[in-house]
Length: 391
Image (cartoon, rainbow, N blue to C red; front, side, top):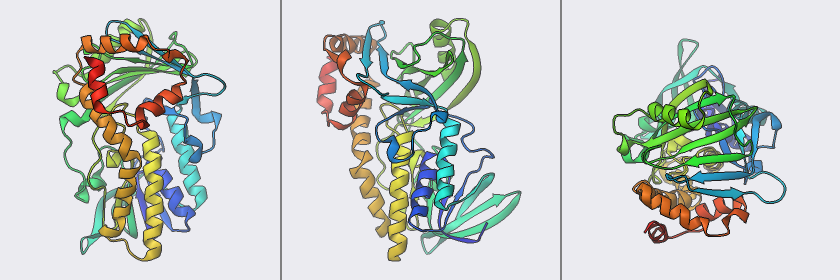
């Protein structure tokens, strides 16, 4: 490892790997570090990803696809089912083998010219004159200093980089989901269909999901909004759900974690530093999806880093260009879905039943899943229409 780079990226998930790839393709000297010893481990993700736009970031490889998704079923508390189906050829999305997907993204960053180090942890920032100038870290038990013109923090929901820079503080309970997930086997599931279950008995302030992974396996999990916590751990809710939906199944793995479901932050950059992905809390607050937003923000950060370095200006003012791009890009959907989430999490089971029953009356089954997703996230649907749907 050298002592000086153009860009240092902390965290080798989808946001960090994409940022490193983009910066390296601009001809910059890039260091990408990951504190864990294996890329993509541990997996703390339902592993679902919509197909639209994915090939802008990485070419399809069946090695990291467990299942191709062509439909979805949404269940109301009373059992009312709303079905979506993808018409024509091709899938609407994928259930990933996430560790292989993450490794493919890191390989792409390395092939673009980035230096990649695992078991390398950032322990602080080098800050001079209010501008970030690099990182302090530890590798093989030894401390090191690595200077850079720009640092990109992509170190997940618990982002230490964001806290050190003063950009990220404590998260409100109303803006975080506590999640639990089991990987189960020997289950009878539709291999091409997602299942989502709503209801306060299932998951207060959130929903439960079933994502097929092929070979009679599935990721089954749920999230509970922090402000709705009633003393019962999400894993207890999950056990109850699994016992009812998949009695007698084998649980091969259990994971737990937190997912930010926030509005867009005012600033996710400062002099010499930008935050990307979950580290910038850029998760879709309605769906809890974060992979695509992570890659989009990573690419934006890598591009802005290259422009700033080439212009010789990495000041806070110069890097505000990144904040503007986020707000005018994925920030629009995040803000809109945050408003919708505020109404959805307050809905009673009775209101949710009424909503799905009313939607059943439309010819929604013939509408492609990808079109439904795009409509919900990009149409600019006014929040008042969501309220009226519940009444």
